[in-house]
Image 1 (spheres, rainbow, N blue to C red):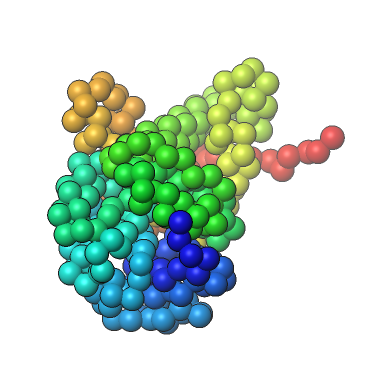
Image 2: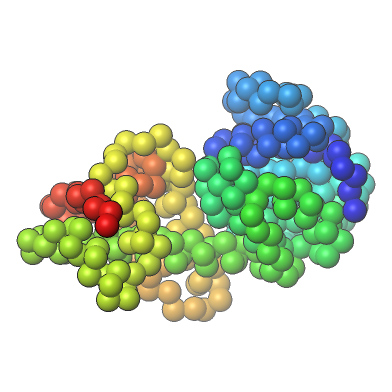
Length: 300
């Protein structure tokens, strides 16, 4: 088990990594951070900002990464391994590919280091409020060493098996989240095109039992547009491609995955890639030629 105070590094200080770094500082850990944007690193009060991944590796027992692509994760892992002490742990929270993570794990093990993947769900708000759910893949000993940190940072830490299993589960979860959201918006667009009020359609779906997380909760926010991006649509498009890649690799028929690749590529082509996930409703409106607004819910 790790000591109460741990030397932790964080690389990648976007909406997820920045909030996690701040929470680690609040928990009393010795935190070293870096980011391509040096101002982000300086903004983490109480952490030591440095200029390179190697410096983070030299200063930390555990490095936590939150990065955009499998290629970036691999490059950061290689730089880290050149400076990290044997036995140190590379804990990656990114949404990436199982095979890529397995390759990184093998390369790090050859140098006496450990790799644990812990992709998450819960987004920026979950990172800020310690409500993340981590899907963990890795060998038992390093997983147990990082678990106290993950338990502090989220509401659930779920071991999935060896490296690759956690990332696969993250992509499975994302496929469900993406398709439920898009199918709900398309269905509501169909209702509106036929003259049915969005609120009435939502109440029928909820009452009839065909509901999902989007209809139950997120639909109440569809009138809000242009929120600061917490999960950008171009990152969602990247994730859709990863989902399709994994499905193809397993020989799984994944028509919904293919559909989401088409949808999200089209969203990016429409110039919406830097918009928040909640603005997926804008793409539905553009593609369907209808406006989706919901009347305020009347409480009994």
